[in-house]
Amino acid sequence: MNDDNNYLTQEKFDEFKNELQFLTTTRRKKIAESLEYARSLGDLSENAEYAEARDLQAATEERIRHLESILASAKILKKKKSNEVTLGSKVVIVKQGEKDTHDYTIVGSEETNMIERKLSYMSPLGAALMGKKKGDDFTFETPNGRQKYTIKSVD
Image 1 (cartoon, rainbow, N blue to C red):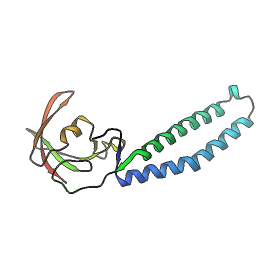
Image 2 (cartoon, helix red, strand yellow; image 1 turned 180 degrees about the vertical axis):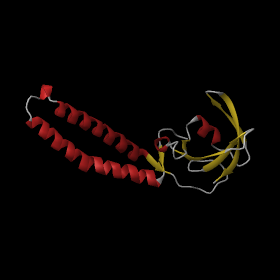
Image 3 (cartoon, rainbow, N blue to C red; image 1 turned 135 degrees about the horizontal axis):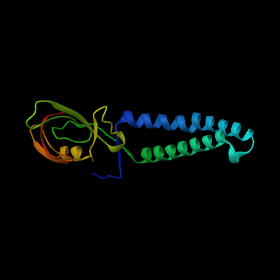
């Protein structure tokens, strides 16, 4: 896979697009108002409100540039019915010698979220899963050494 692409689900693409819209309209306007108010307070060299507003402006502009870059190169994931682990697959695995299963959805790096069990295809576990099928055994390197797992299902 080409790592220059930002693979996103349609939902995440829409979320980033909405965030960009909010930042470029509402947030920029509020920051401009804060800067204007801070300027009205006088001496800018010792004006904490002005410094804070400038920092917020810089962070917002950086986030806008980042989102624009992601959206410009985004590839929307289209789930294909496959018995092989690919981007967008939901995978259930079990560590050999244990009974507890672990389920993950394989996503692009911008969408990774371990709370939601969304795993990047570029992570060590994600990379080890790519291309495997139900019933396959695989190993991958962790800080605790090599771990061996079996794939229970792929959706």
